[in-house]
Length: 358
Image 1 (cartoon, rainbow, N blue to C red):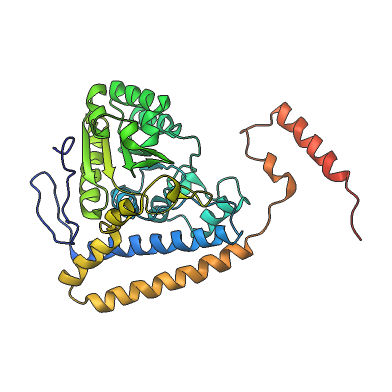
Image 2 (image 1 turned 90 degrees about the vertical axis):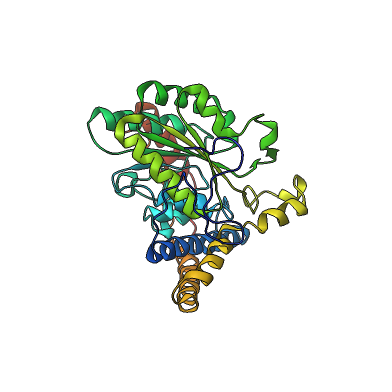
């Protein structure tokens, strides 16, 4: 497959016009395209509401994803039920597609749960805050799946900043040498916090894969159809024993790095306007308006679902129960650890030292 150099692979142009590509297997029907649009719209609304909740002090922090919906939804909808996803702290669209309840995401960012969901149930590893560290976890999981003779694959989500981390390059070495059934999806959103991608790599990020011995593909990360087609084929390649693929989804973080960030300090308004014209949600909505059998009714129903989700999120956030004070010491180790037990005792004594208010 081409796409490692030059223009990223795409099926929908910026105006929402569908154009066949010889390297992409695109067999999407109307129901699938509707589903992808609904996913992206719901994820966009989730992101908007959670950022507002963080600004209002209801969440400790929020990591916005707006602009990256196509890369996340397109890739996550390519996974099979047994596959395991290893996300970053920004992959709420992946969590949505894996069926993680929105309240579980809120619990994580409100600080009332260690993770918020059972990774075995949803086939989604807990969010990784350590940049790039989870790439090794994904490779290890994929190697284990292969050793057990399963047909499962792993997918590791990375940002462009993570491509400069040693752990990611170590993961590439192991994945290539062991032909592990893993796909690395790098969402190149142009900024590693305030560091532009041009200062991190002299070549397109997808080209780095070649040096490790496996293919790299550049795809338009704002084209959900192309993202799904590319990642679907990469996962099929991994399952068939041909090893890893690096997919560079070229996209843009439309909002701040976190709710504590001000992107106006390091990027220009003109840059933001250029990428706004490539909005993945608007692109697919335009396509649907031209091709769907009853676009107005469908789009209106999605808007209603988004409004209902917003109400659900606000209610869920404000009614999440606070954890027991000692719960922070649970689920640290699989078995009792003497040092953790000692520290837990210190903390219990500390709490008991306070006088109870009448």
